[in-house]
Image (cartoon, rainbow, N blue to C red; front, top):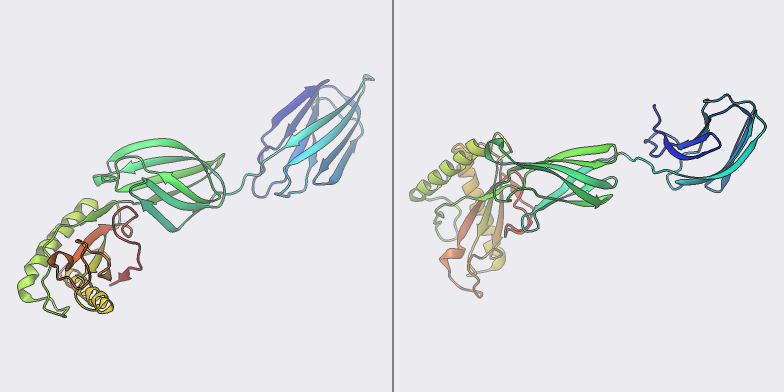
Length: 327
């Protein structure tokens, strides 16, 4: 592997160098190159509480002498004493401080990635420090909305990557995170739509879709298919159905009923041609459109939300994070 040399000092025709950023399988090293011939060379480097000694007889001008250090990622400094005995008769002694930083591989964990629409950030986890992010924001039709590089100083661990572009328009983010020469990329969609529709009116305590209500689902399916045509080539279009009730009756029963009704709507849409994945969840009384007291009959709260995105509804969308169930 070709080593990158960083000059540390010059003294009496001695050129010092170091491997500044050893790679994952590379050991740090200190280099000396005399500009004139040496009769002898003595190097004593103290590193991690131990001494590494190199002694050489004659060294020709321009020949590089290498002092390698054991790889230990908790040790990144050394102090090297150098005695150079030149063939011309002069002797130089010098103490040289040496520093390096290990170049760790950069990887990204997307298993718990999420977006925050209000903060305009996407949160991921990285294996090492991140210095900057190159971000391209795509809209409908994969039109480039914005492209820029932003400085970051975060990781390892949680890293918040800022959005570029208006969150209402951004369908897909293409992100490259960098740390020196190390880099890793990912794509993420903060895109989220609430599909307007007419709510199905179910019979009391029933999850069966009445025949005279199917026209509402037909119209909703047309809206969903339009979304699929517009965005399906850019991101996977997934449907999240949130079932909701008013506060009349038992809360646990309302939650179970709202989930059955959301599932029925999903089965109807899937069975009539919606091509994307469908997820559902029963919020019961937990997602009221109108805040009422307990036991209040309110038609606005007896509803289902038709939410579309490449990922579950993000923070800032008004929808709590829950364990959506796949249909």
